Image 1 (cartoon, chains in turn blue, purple):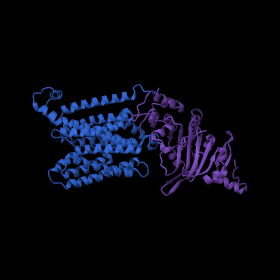
Image 2: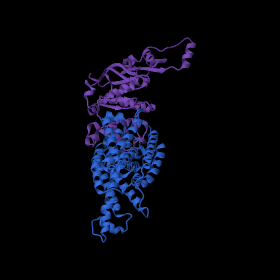
Image 3: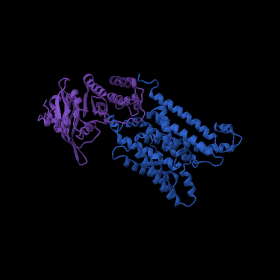
Length: 336
Length: 278
């Protein structure tokens, strides 16, 4: 029988609930654990809304950790979805905003914005968006011409764009000498600690409609994976679909980069793991990546906060340390 | 007989090159129409124009007597399905998922399948003989099986015209015949119009009821295989020495390219046999 036992809407619902639950559990851990003193059980009670002996515990959890955990969830979901979309559009399982250099382009824009003394939102975010669009234009220019760019050439061009962006960033940083320097450097490495609850709210309002739109286009992404020509003859307006997907993804990636800096490889690890587990249907993968990516990022951030005895590691360091070996592994696999 | 496709005064340029020169022909409903010709003759371009992938400036393409620009993409996809020469298989879709995608022109944007969609997909898989493969991944099956899955997907569109660009190009002999027999059954049992590009002249001769020979974007000849596969037409199209005789299969024309050593040998004997006009 071709009809599966669980119909597609039911499967989507199940995956959403499963990864939603994982996100919630990770969130509770993210709120309860961390570098501050205090027993886990005590923290857990505070998270559950019960009275605690020390009022400081409540303050830490709701004022400091809550925005951070929410931010991690949003950023993780955004980057995982970004990876998923680029992999579908470029038909390359190794594509990812950071690897392609789109995050780097956003970062240049963001730093220029910061140096001009603009506020994080909308000023810096707008510059980051412009930066990501410029790198995207370069990539598309190279990817057009003679059909789709080959796998290796695309990755190589990403490495070069990243190297160039890195040089520009270093140049901008070296020209900065005041107190902003430390901020910029820490932010660059990927940092979730500077965010307040209102900022998270603004981000959520901007990102949530984009997530809905990406889910709406998930079946179109399936069709696009059969190739431009077949998609077109099955009724897809590929120009409109491609531009919408690219535009939305660059927008979501650049506003998260402008808030959290460079978090590499998140968009590589999650879509790949989920595709292995759930298959290639994007109607299932979009919600799975959204919630799975959020879960992954909360856990990475938790590691970043709790690994060192004092202070913390930028979370971008953690994601790169996990993601880069995964990338190399996938590259070796794909050569076989 | 109704006209499924009519192409009139089609002209197409690619950069400086003229790829199609004022081409006009029509394909009757229920025909098995095969376009042959050497590499670079414009076969694939013509196919892409008919499929609505490639834009054209001059001329007109009508599908069932309605100009193609008056169809929306989805409407066209319900009338005409296209099987390209090459297609990507680098993402782990199952055969069933790919076949089901053919229902897209009949479904909403999210493509949630209903009961009838499952039935149609199942019938398409049974027709193409890939029912046993439905849960297999596309990158884990053979080239011939993959080709049949892509054809099953095209059938799911429930089209009246199926366009295929060299569907047998990279297949071994048994898979070539299977695909061609399948197309014949589409025509006979489902009354579909099959339009195909092929570079295998002999296979085309065995199946086509109308052949179009294309050379440099111009029609060298068009008609039944017996009428159109003449030595003159073929030499004009391919520019090499060919032997045309009758195949024991239904007396249809059979074309053999003649290797240099045979030409030299026959020249020496003064018996250069340049083929008979069939």
